[in-house]
Length: 356
Image (tube, rainbow, N blue to C red; front, side, top):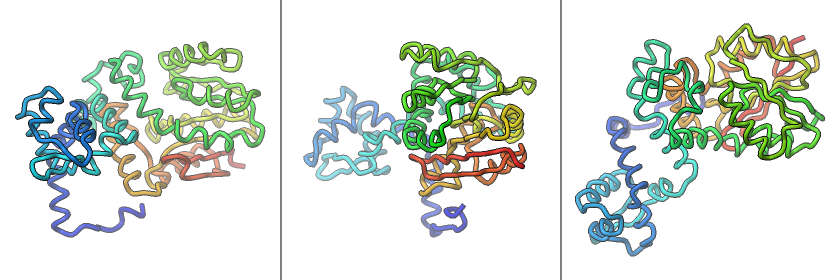
């Protein structure tokens, strides 16, 4: 919360920011088209020499008019600079063009979210993902992931994996330091954690529990890697509260999973974890919490990602603050025995045991 307790902008700066917000959709699309059309790339390739509007239009095979309106928008955004009618790349343009995090976020926002966000007001009013109608008639996006258009799937998984891929190498030693061998991976998705775990420790055995569509993707990848003797699959609809979780695991692991559910659903899932574990078992949760971030921009990105959950994912979840999330953990009967912030880009690891 430390970033958001004071109004740091002057009145003029605040009014200026309001205009950025008002023109937000135009800003986003202009920047995206400048990137995807090749305009930013040919400008970058020209170095400090720069290119005229006419030269750029010829190189990217677009009209001089089309290039002009995009470049003039780009000037206001700081993507490009102009001197003596020649355009060079600005610092912000460099990051739009080259920064993997920015590219991942932009593709996710355009391919997955952009049209669906039009229905945000309806989602807020109904508690349902009204924007999901742009893709299909599912209750949640997770039911339809395997049926989304290929480019949408690619952007969704790239976004989802970007943050876990960065965190997994750092968190593996923290998870397996006490000789844990048998893990139930709830919400294992495409099997990234299971694969990383089996590579890290040859004695580990993982059971992935998830929706059938996600398990099919994970199963294919794990079969290709020859890991079927160390990874099992359990197809389950986690939201079905009559489903009891299997017993006999050292740890129940959930990575970037519980943010896909409402507070009441999180408590329900954790209570079923409680019933499945013995007195020495642990729940380990890897999640990014916006109030545990080092930098304000990281908190900002997580806060805005919550809007995706509201409008498209399920209508009732978000990127939580640790404050709210920990209340759910305690309500389910667990105490946090270990926690580690700032893992990778944004993650926090919580190790939980049954309250005695």
